[in-house]
Image 1: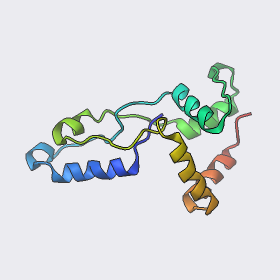
Image 2 (image 1 turned 60 degrees about the horizontal axis):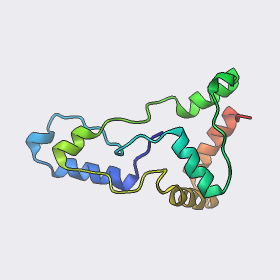
Image 3 (image 1 turned 90 degrees about the vertical axis):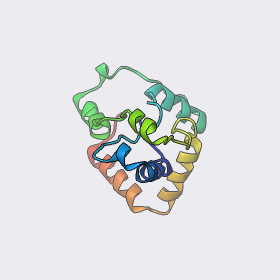
Image 4 (image 1 turned 90 degrees about the horizontal axis):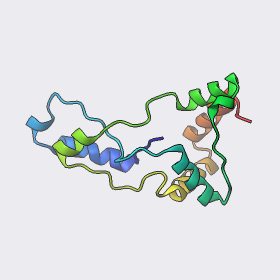
Length: 134
């Protein structure tokens, strides 16, 4: 899994805009956190935050419907290499990763959900429309 905090994304754009033109002109840069987070790391963060136990298991036992649901949510590239951006501009991500500070990310999401934020509602609708893994 991968995520880059919006503040880090914004600072990456500032780093590109502030860099010497010869270092960034006609270039394409990947903006990403410094590391990929595994399902096991995410599960451990969720377990700690919610005080629950998550059992990871092989997707080989999943039905076609369950696999379709997972592909719907996750079937896109999750991480890109941002070393070129870091080298050319000196940019680095500063915010804690998803697994390092899951509690904060969870609390922010829950606050938006409580306010019926449009983005949260759209995500919930998309997931509900696709079904759920049982």
